[in-house]
Length: 440
Image 1 (tube, rainbow, N blue to C red):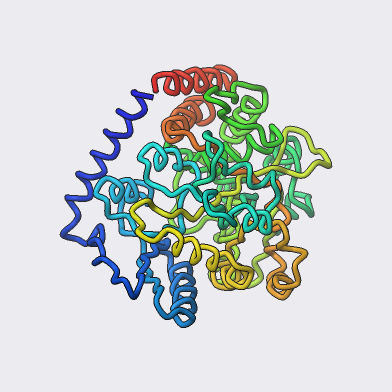
Image 2: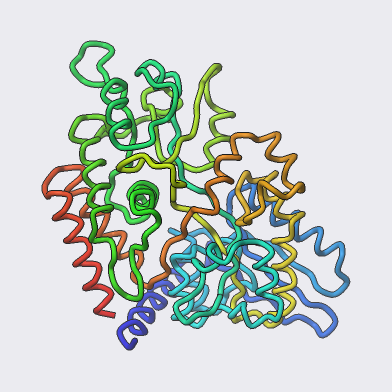
């Protein structure tokens, strides 16, 4: 525990230095003036993308129109290398907002170590609010190691594989592959040299293989969850991924690079929309991009994350979720909780779908009539909603970034460049990760 506190102190100190360096550029807001006895003003930080920021403003405007003495002011989370670093900087300088609606569940332990967030299950109606939204199994993923809840799971973008269906049909398949063998068979027919220069100009899949921690959350991690049936990477302080499922993922992705089905190069523009790549890992946010920028007649479909062997069991994938938190600097936590409940009302969950095409984390998305019109108009979102109950978050451990950094390094060594066997690389990643956990 002492090592963990020391580590957190160093992180927060570095974040505070960054914060002070960018104050002149409005990196962090000034602390608001104290609210009067007659009026409460809550500051709500939203993600910076235009659709979500507009959603936040619409919700706040509706709330403010209904309230006489409890106002909400929306601000985008300040610019920085990552929102997680900005939040740590705000914690260190005590300039956190009252409410933040883009919290990464994998970073929650840092917020807890900093004693920066309010315990939400202290509110009397927390359990009833969450039971109305999701199953006990869905909610359990967001429980902190101390048994309590400090985040309200809000929205999700489950990861699937996006396919160019013309390229798949030309390769002899009229549906997305379900397992590694099918995927590799189709890849062998898709990857080809069309202009005779002895270099492929069509590939099966693009994988951004740079050894950066978060990139492995969108290829290795969904593949691992699919292969293992949703097994954890870390559990009760012990590394759990030194197993056949993880090794199988490394073997599969290594084959993609070794056989030339995944290119070791970067592209100008979007190679998928250019018809040069047949598949990529992505989430529902790609639908609006394709509809806007794809050439006329472009045909696409989403398929499940491939597994070592096809089964009839539901595919598990990464949820890419975001949560809502209330910071301890909030002077009116009960008021903040009332507004958080308003954000996640059914009406505002429907608005979130309409404005952002992001899925509220709800078990009843496809059964509640309030959402049926949206899915009738956006049938491509149905398969993501079907995947949502089985989609997984990521473990909240203070060492998460370092662990994914290690996985990314071993991925590069074994999968991309073939310097280690997949089994050796996974074992080394697990051993190094456990050493980091034990050091804290």
